[in-house]
Length: 153
Image 1 (cartoon, rainbow, N blue to C red):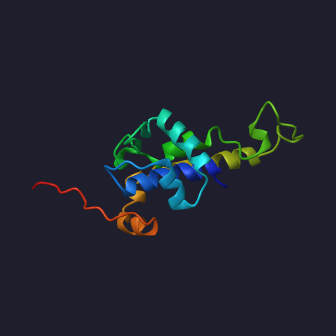
Image 2: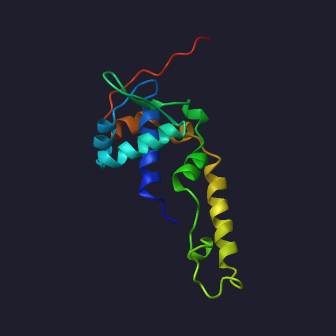
Image 3: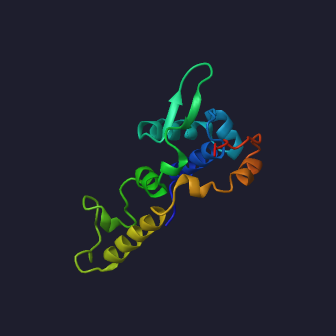
C-alpha cells in the first residue's frame, strides 16, 4: 500500500508543527524545510484546518499551528481523513468494477482485512508519539532549538 502525496504532506505538516509546539509556522517555511511544493501544502493546510487538526490564522503575524495538543491527534484518524475511502483494488468500487470474477473472488476480503489492520496499527499512535524525538527532528528540519515548556512540581 502506498500513501497518497496528500497524506504524506499532511503528516509532514503535522510533524513539523509538533516539533515546534506552541509556535506558528508559515506554509512557505514548512514547504521549504521539506523541499516540497508550497502549492500542495496550501491545499493540505486548508483541508487539515477544515477537519480541525490545524488552526490557520491569516494576515500579519498569521500562520498555522496545531489545533489540538499532539497527544490528542490520532495518526489513524488523520490517515482515514486524508486517504478517503479505501479502494486498494477495482472491485472495491461498485460503480466502476468490471472484474469478471468479483462475485467469487476472495481477494477483496483479504485486502479489506489488510487495510483494516493497517489502520488498527496507526490507531495506536499519536502525533506526540511520532515526535518523541523532537530535538532530532528539529535539527533535521533546521529549526531553531526551543526550550521545552517547564512543568511546576
